[in-house]
Image 1 (spheres, rainbow, N blue to C red):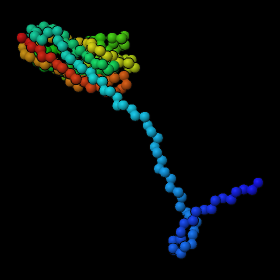
Image 2: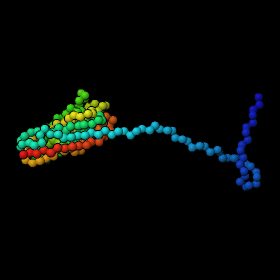
Image 3: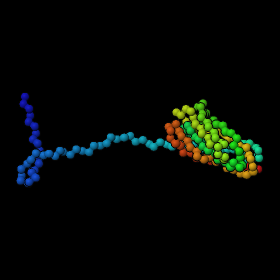
Image 4: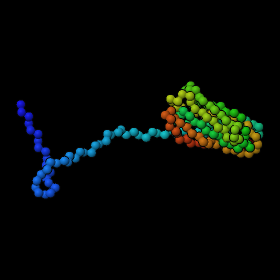
Length: 184
């Protein structure tokens, strides 16, 4: 069998313009590479946690005790929700705090840390689920804080530095509502 001859190399015109041809050293243009397509991912929905301070009483007498509840509400699964509750320490005295049912309603263990004595007028509460694979959702009491009325006056129980995270480790948006308490 006879091999077929190779096709001749293309020749480019001579740069001198004399009609002679020289072998071409140029390669044919290569089409630009097309980057592989990536699937589009919708941005993650940020969960919203609403914290509302409610009080068993909004008007109390001197030396009377009452309980403020922090009511949580969220459609997204919450795993952590630390906050500070601020008040006028000349009007109220912090007594103690306990965890609510919101984060542990499915039987999950809760980590609950309270510091209501270090800074007068500021109760710092760290609260979160021990099992971080699934968060709590719906509406329920996050914490209960007991106070004693010290002196006549009005104070506003308001939440400060409230943050929250979901089971995916995403920081959630937090909205808060406080409540006024009058001591007579």
